[in-house]
Length: 137
Image 1 (spheres, rainbow, N blue to C red):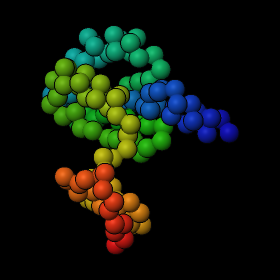
Image 2: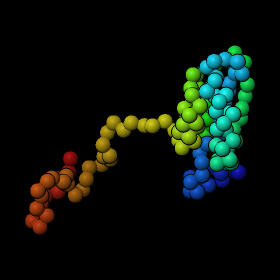
Image 3: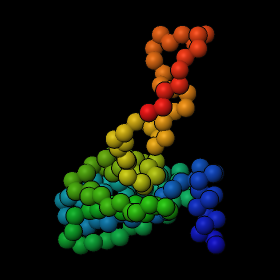
């Protein structure tokens, strides 16, 4: 299908994993001042630098500003832009543009498989010119 083709192309051609940005703000609230300044000064240069990312601008009267990033292969991310300055909004867009959308996983174990090593465990100061026994654990 077409969607599977786009996913394969995204993986190998290093395309952007962001499918859409949505900025929601209020015309009158003070917490949306930075987003309104961003829309007046920085949105057009950002959009011309990144024509492959569509940006939706939505008016939400009486609500705090939010930013929604939709990704191709990951769940979308919703971020509050409450009282954010113009440059903070720009940095937020750049940060979420560069992300893959997947959560960062913490590895709790070292990279060890279920089967033990056939060659034995490595030890410092091991003399490799002499025969050594194979340890199976």
